[in-house]
Image (cartoon, rainbow, N blue to C red; front, side):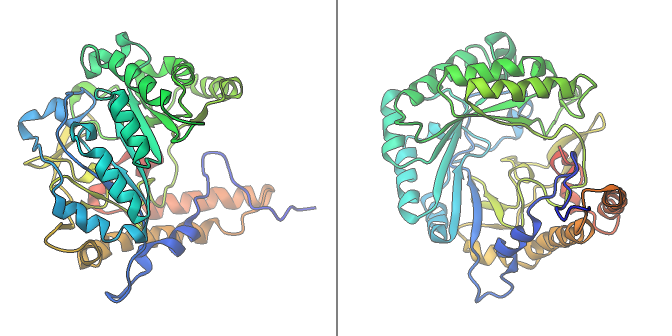
Length: 391
């Protein structure tokens, strides 16, 4: 007897595309409709106290524009906060270089959305930890690029690893009953991938609730050519198996990125319902499309550094966020992804877990790959992004 349960082939997960379109502010087609934003990434400052070799700032400091988000821009975000599910206070800079972080978090929380923040771990104290928790912070993340000074310090500077360890320990000490949850954002690159299991142990030792592993998705220089950890080698599946198994006794949840390319209708940043606001007030579909540079944006593509313009849809506070969202260029950008989502749903619908379903799945995947590289190509600025290639 054939099962009626739809198939979900490993390597080709079916995203909640229908729910994405249902919730998306893209469905608001007239200026009289007020969008309901899912997630806003808000850069409080583009100033940073590190020069990481994995970041644009470490390679192009002469192009960097250091700026703090102005009160007028913050107020523009507050104006839509009651229609926003979550706000993440981080961009290309170190948010805690601003002494008013707890105050800004408290103001945003009073407006309604969940509020999270990320840090490189270079700035933390008991006083700051208590202030952040008292402000109502919903989630705290610390970024790591290794599990020891030997791995991380060559990438982020001498002493950066021990400072991040101390910062995470201080903050975790003041959390009550795992609230707010503390995350380790771990940058996975080939030089450190063999020690990923140690990252899980480290997260547990520091009292962290989750290890979230991510790829280097914006390489910018030739010395980074061999750093991306995707696609995985033959040894990869065994490594991931033991890592997932170890979660059972470490009791720290684990988030792993895809190691195999796959047809992807819309990337995890999902410009259909999410957006990025830079410290200079510029609004963009994605943080990677709008770094704080006074020039074009470099990206390493097949061993060569290519330059492309920043993708800016509007500027706060000159306009409201809703006005920018409804700009024709922004609507056109989102329309491309909406069409990709619809195609994905159409070709993946009704696939069953039997031999006929498997054959249909293979045909659908081939057809989607052709569409996504042809008539339904993403906007030009997104075509080289590993996220959109399924990694």
